[in-house]
Length: 248
Image 1: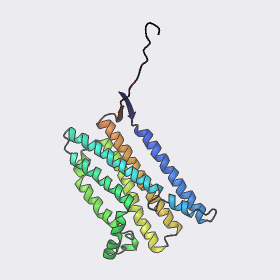
Image 2 (image 1 turned 45 degrees about the horizontal axis):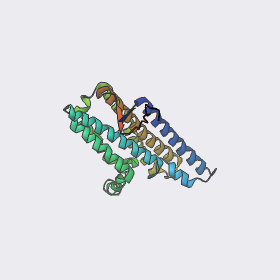
Image 3 (image 1 turned 60 degrees about the vertical axis):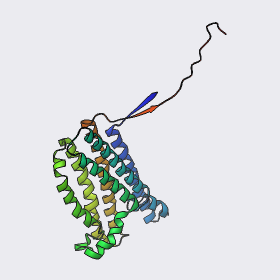
């Protein structure tokens, strides 16, 4: 039986994920610029790499990041259950939450709420709720903070700081710059450069927040669960040729 141990190194994973994000951002910016100023016709390529489009490469990358976050949270939740920690339920709930966000990101569930919310509440002052599903986040985020307050307060200080930084960056993009984008599109066209930069910053912050959260989870695993190693085992047979002592 052969055992292969794969050691997960948080800093290397952070480096690789940030590198991928930079590559996607550069593709997003360069293809948009070349197509907008008619240097090269790249309409299909722009769609493939545009951070604000659905069902393309950046969206797939984001879904994978969210799915990986859900998996890491599940591992922590299982360990928490084994050691009979008081906050096992919260870890499982977070894992389910990130799994839902991953599914939502890939299937655009939140887009379905926009029509109903827009008809009910309108675009809000200066158009901050033009993308009306943001209203759900504005309501939901404070509730989640209250629900998870005790859980967050009892986290190791280092983990709490890392989770906090990642969360602030993500919310700044998903809520803050989404609202700014709503204001911009309320007064200007969706094809304006101002709106392009608003959603570029928004999506960049969202992805960065998730990557930093993954890094924080990996560090938390190493510091509070143990060295994170994936062990693979494989059965194999070795046939030895045995020479006859007689030399035949």
